[in-house]
Image 1 (cartoon, rainbow, N blue to C red):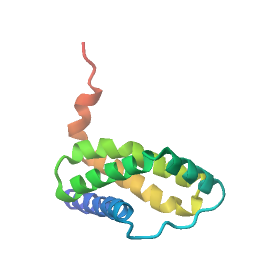
Image 2 (tube, rainbow, N blue to C red):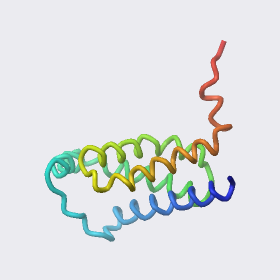
Image 3 (tube, rainbow, N blue to C red):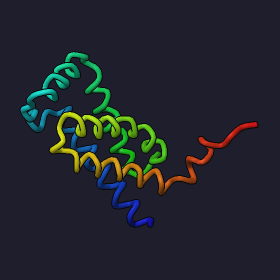
Length: 126
């Protein structure tokens, strides 16, 4: 289980580091988008803060996953970003859905592998 956790954590971290660093350093040209996704993307870009915020979160969580520090916190922080990635791909770009499902399942696996650290969040007080 430890080896699988290390592999999944490292792969997820490398993926998030690659996408965020590529965004901030403009290493890859933006792929051409069409249809409903293009309209959605125009709205995201017009907000001026949402994409840099998501990419900053991806960068910090990617660093966390690669270094193995604060992974319990990173799993929770990155979860809403991954849910959005999954839903955007489901509704707007279904051709990318397999990768989004893989990232979602990897995050769920990491949460499961660190479940002892999350039990206190669900404990009833009183």
